[in-house]
Length: 260
Image (cartoon, rainbow, N blue to C red; front, side):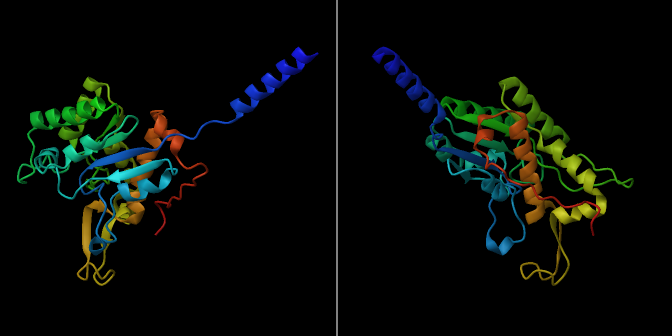
């Protein structure tokens, strides 16, 4: 009788222990890249990097550390010693989201990075992240707003986006193809309504831009959120463990691309 009681009690204890899942340990997600991802100063608003709303989608176990900087390429990010502090702080279980290309690909900029060097730099970010038992994630550069006369979105990062894809394949690194997904989103909105996603302002509309603004590279708050949602969707598709730390029940708010 006593042995049956002890066995039942033990089974109940195991059942109760199984019902309690320990809280996940705290991790950091580092964002390294350019102005399309970075945190903006107040004087630049409503310009918004997609890394800003991205931070709001995760639970309290995740800290988003956005190190992206305006105008940076892989070359300048390394030359200015912006990568080494990230690498030295990495811990097992952390993530590094790597999105470059906008400034690497422009030969007239000081930040220009030849294709071979771009590949080398991306592989360095990947290998040094892994050396700290953290997880690298590569992203192709987000699309610029550019349409042809027929209203079809145009590719503006063909060479450097393909280099990112190649590095992802060669290093077996998770890839978020933000170039392609953001192009699809822009096509959905169309030539006119896609302006709703970018820092387009009429003269006098915002005190930071008294003469107005027509920026087809940088997002406003809505555009940044929509780009962040594309990244989040691929985190789920890739089945990264990070997806388990997304805030549950988050409702994605969208704007009808036909609305005016």
